[in-house]
Length: 324
Image (cartoon, rainbow, N blue to C red; front, side, top):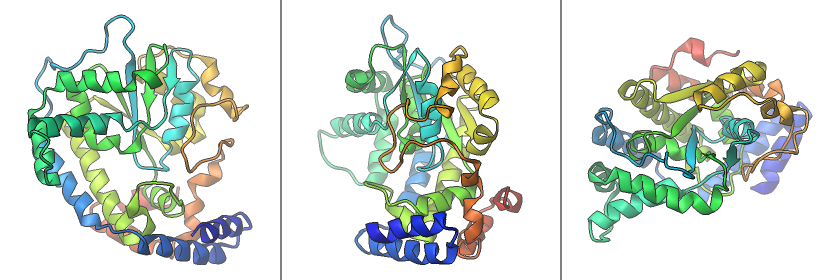
């Protein structure tokens, strides 16, 4: 698997795209053969979450305020893997008031722990587990999350948690930590799907090794994010990876303002010095930002046609799927 993915990367760098895809497809198939996974389970989870949290929490929200002196104020950076969450964290983490804590699994862990506590520790099927989270003490959940993150959040007034799959919990984050910021990083659908398919992840993301699984997962992700936006207008700040790469200063200024942070020129320093940055994704290497990543997927439009067809069938507009 590792050799196939390495060869795919080398051939892509040499612009031998058919050879690159041949090795990538073989490597992904090998990886998928070693996984016990059914994408329907994750797609159904979106339905269970929407059913459990159909509307926004009533105001005022009785969550953990995280405003007391010395409390760390989280900035959640969510999205799909390889969508640009690391780039956004690098910008935020370059601010003097922000500690980049990387990908933390603490919110999900605290959530599951709290749900199981209500059942006396009895394991629940996922539909029942999701339903049980409706009745949690969200203030206690927020406090537990902050307590779990304290060793990793330094002494700065803000910290980032860039676990991409926290997008599943946006409604719960809002209830537990009403003063937290939620930044959602978006990326061109085809570019996003290809970027996930080409990555051999160290852990997690079992849907990413089969194009049909990727398309179905992407549709579920989009449906849930649309639900969070509609049920909690103004709570989630969307930032486009493409716009950020093309216009880094203006987009970075807007990002910091959305997070309640004053502009600092240091937030762009890593563009000139890419090694002086924050915690990297396990599958990434620090490097300058190139806009070639925006259209790299176009070399494989024929191979990705099945993904495009599924996204169109799910109501994602053709204009959104076209090359940019």
